[in-house]
Image (cartoon, rainbow, N blue to C red; front, side):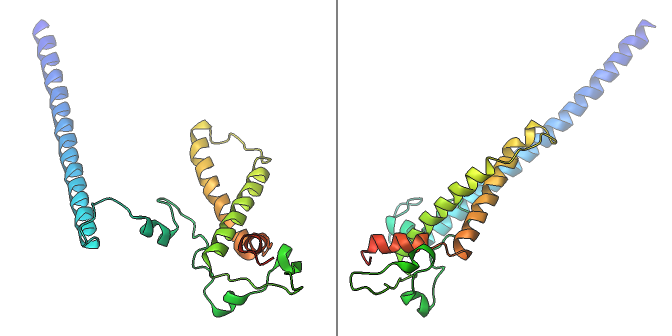
Length: 190
């Protein structure tokens, strides 16, 4: 009986060590595939950067002219307002909403160039104010803990993204005129 107990424990120990060895080998293979994938991606990115910068700039550096052209942050998922207005009629548009009653020093209604950088930045400011308004409204909503606490972070993140898109849609489609008012003040047309 003692022989069977020793043999049984030897066989069980050998089988469990074999399973652990197989698992370790699979993990090692997965790790090497992952590292080779990272190396391939890094090499591809370095190749693209060197092709994009023929004048010898440092790889990975970003000039201020590149930042100013895109007007977007890394990871920004909303469309924004730059290049949103592109038609000829947008270059001499009349103010809307709150700014519709504004008159200049001659008593005439000024025109707005919606294709300009200043107007795009004015729209961004209006969008930020819409986000603040929606955020205040959002804080009044009571959330249930139906799915538990582990989903609070993910739910909050996706709700933030959803409300950012709501704010952008409101800014683009409701014509409150806040951006028009800001544009007129900052451009000195008022």
